Length: 219
Image (cartoon, rainbow, N blue to C red):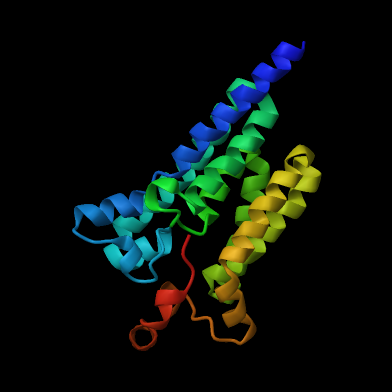
């Protein structure tokens, strides 16, 4: 029995490592490089969906978002298939960490929202979809993606208590990291200085606040 438990520990560690490196996959960095750009030196310098959209356009933004979500789903499902719920929970956290702090890219990743959503989707689809609905409501009422991401990060951790209790501790770690990565956005929101998303702005407003968006929400 002890041998099996030790084996499971090593297997869990191996799965976590695989999930972490799945998280290291950065579609925005790869696409930017093909265009002769360094995404870390463009826009906000973030490797997330919003900066990819800002720097390379809608197609690149969509691809980045989809890939970031999928890598979270894949990692969580691999963990689930191999070691059940605990494998899924651990891999969800590790793929998220791999996205936020990728060793392949000198620990310069995104803020983790899209990958966190994908990971939670792999762990518990209902938890992920309810959290997404909350994010959507906040975004469309506030016109600020950063606020939606912040509220969503808190919401999914709270919801985990009721929908996936075993995942609660992992959800709390992910939620705290997302909040820390959004600390600049939180300060701007408190002072009423966080710009609205470009899709909610009029053409003239978009032009005058273009430089401000360089520091806003990136996933």
